Image (cartoon, rainbow over all chains, first blue to last red; front, side, top):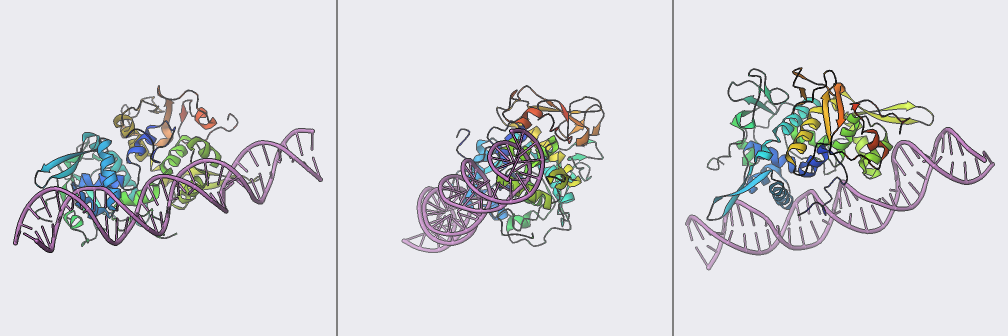
Length: 179
Length: 179
DNA sequence: GCACCGAGTTCGTTCACCGAACCGACGGGT
DNA sequence: ACCCGTCGGTTCGGTGAACGAACTCGGTGC
């Protein structure tokens, strides 16, 4: 529970980047956070959408809760079921995901535009830093609308992938009645 | 060179974030890129500053060159010595490092300000997105001056860490006459 | 009672990371 | 000529993490 034991620490590095990577730098972790922004909240939905091993997913979710990035909360009592939602600290990761996605789309060869992000208030597509070029304000993730792009597979195998085909507001939970 | 048998690929994920993570998501990779922004260019300097295993460092440098993030170039013939410098594609990672560092400083508990980044033209400290609040422009990394903060260790063990104590412009190579 | 579901845990294999040792090309000192 | 040191790696044995399949457990619906 304290610092060590895991090989995930960058030892004596004194750098806020290294400290950030100790929290969100392990394999799968940032994709879990991404899915949380997309509205995924349940263990099984993360599982089918990510394709990660079950044990790894369980470990990442627990680590993110302990790091204060996700909050685990009961959403029904019988049977007892928990969901994982982003805390303020998790929401603060939006610029990281935004800049990573922008780089991946612009700089990794063979990339096609898979998703577009728009300012929900005015419909304008976000700039590279997650700001609205029209309104000249940084757009918080709650005000972002995600729309599918041309490169997106029209018929994903998993139900979560299908649910994410439609335009949707970030952070809004998936509707399980429609899955 | 194609998809590979390595476990570093996020399989069927269609997401520019996942594609970016396939390039810079492995352990140590992003810290190598960070050091490249700080002016580190030689194998041995990366090695002593990062503390990574030699084999891992060699693999990461090679992978980054193949991905077009770093360029390997000869800087002397006898003995033949190469240095690794950021390409345009690597320079485009600046917003990623900037947002990660900002998050690590603001949101990871127990963090103290270790380094500050200023707009070299006017001296103003950069905003959270790497923009200059005074000039209202996004600041390219070449125009960023890095200054040590209060949380920085005054006497690091390695010579590279000592060289990075002084205020310096990003991307400028370390001066090996002073190491 | 029984099948089913969500949310994990357990387990054996595979793979990547680690750190120490080793290697080869070159330069400098004696 | 010989030894020493540096730089930039490669090799190797041990360890820990990731993987995927199987299993468990609580609870519900039929």
